Image (cartoon, rainbow, N blue to C red):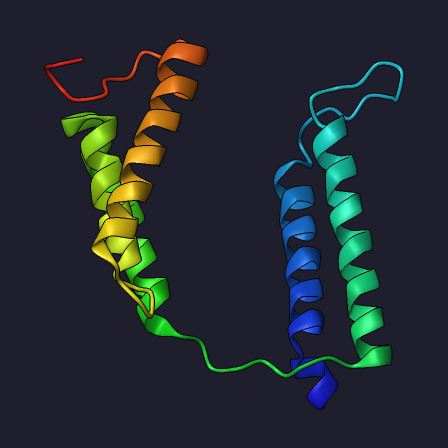
Length: 149
């Protein structure tokens, strides 16, 4: 019973579940052939790969065993989730930069250590990177700071 509650076995089951869900929702898409792929060909093949990997991970976990699942740490999970929700709500209203600042600030509060100088460095680095990639590199029509740029 202990092997069924190991991290590896449960992650294998998660892969299998995602594969089955993808197959279920993609069943109405035309699959086509390898030469003339339809819109459902790649999702179905990726689902089969997920199923295969999940099965392989489950078998390896049952044969070799792995470390048991520990109790989840709710503070990091909660703070990262709240940060993502705040990012989604602020992105359209305030722009990319304020949304990133709030996301990093709230998510970092879920960690064991909080150092303001490190978090400011993360904010600056991610703001520059996201601006370069999304605004300038990809040319996306997003506002960096609403009403300014």
